Image (cartoon, rainbow, N blue to C red; front, side, top):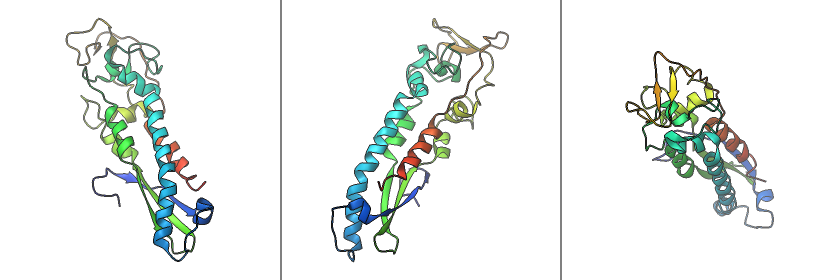
Length: 213
């Protein structure tokens, strides 16, 4: 169970061999608490580095970069074929930063604990990481109840947003200021889905399996 204050989490579990992980460090094998503390000291910087790499990959991801560019950004991700941008296509309010919540989760919601397996020299490392379902629940499309923009980007659920028209000059009636959904006009834009948050979490989880290396 996650610690109090955590969002929903999944729990990758790694069984580590203390002798291999600690190498030249020595401790009385009968003192399991001391061994666990030493393991924490070895694992903590490894996990911290993996977490920093996760945050960095999120920050430089084409989707993150484009959304942070706001309503006048270029469609550098290529998800709209170069027309307009994701910020106005999805319909975020001008001045908002939709990716901030995900960045905050990646920076603050990853923890771990070390526990004794009952076998001499073997300990279980449980890493608490954000669940993709929770991230989806915290990234709603601003005007569409029950639908996540992060999930839609990955699964192609943005293809039915209507007739998207973009203008760098802007529209008075636009939430984002530069994009509108026009019933009688069409830009011919088609949305191309792209791996995003779920792929980052998947790759991070796989990396956790090498904490004992």
